[in-house]
Length: 350
Ligand code: G3H
Ligand code: 13P
Ligand code: ZN
Image (cartoon, rainbow, N blue to C red):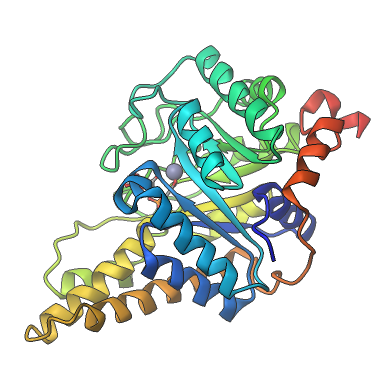
């Protein structure tokens, strides 16, 4: 099966009423872990690479590893996505590399830290949409700003300072024509999201629900959606790690989001914790070992277990074989004719 556009995966998810996890990759073991989980659960796959991942692995290595995953698993629909593109050039280079989807995160300026103005965000995102859609490529935008500083994304703080304004979300979708929209509802990147289990009032699910009602054709995206499970924290700390106590996004809240238009759920930290815990365990229990395969294999298995769990929880499990891939050139025609237009003003005309 060719690599498909993320838009097709998300349209299918909307029809089926489920969400699709978007898992970050930096190396071969993470790519293999996702594919093992997808085969086990029969799930479609969104594999995403941050700018940091592209620079760590180098574009050609990373892309060819992703291609190998696709080649070896012809029954699994897969989209390759640029996570948190910081500029038109980053998105363009991802498309030229062969990615079928890009996130233009215009909520921040190019430095990835300073919040941009609404007009700046509209302008750069609109430009990316024009370039991407004419080539059949999906675009995710972001409005509102996530919290978290430790991974270089987000404007810092708790994640509640820059919650998305629904009026701005509607105007943004109308003026840019994005396929998917990341909104800020109080989540943040990284392990340290909340200092107690967030109840319904901490995450602004009411805002998400309102945005979905007003933008029914735009797929909503939840970033910072690791659940930071206690058992993964405990394994890391049991074997010499020093994680402070922390809470992530409860699965029930993500599932509530999925019932209200969330189609893409970004998860990275949970996999990082699973990998680190597994490697620490080997180092701690058998310090005489030095063959990297002795710790990379359990690390890969630990990540595959988390990914499979999320695939089941998000509802994508069992949906890999539901549809035939739409060629990217066909997607381009769909954008050109207006058939794939998500803008609210055109919704009635579809
Ligand atoms: O957006 C955050 C992802 O966890 C990727 O993080 O930029 O450190 O690769 P990264
Ligand atoms: P987490 O840090 O919660 O895994 O979020 C990942 C993310 O949003 C990647 O874009
Ligand atoms: Zn993110």
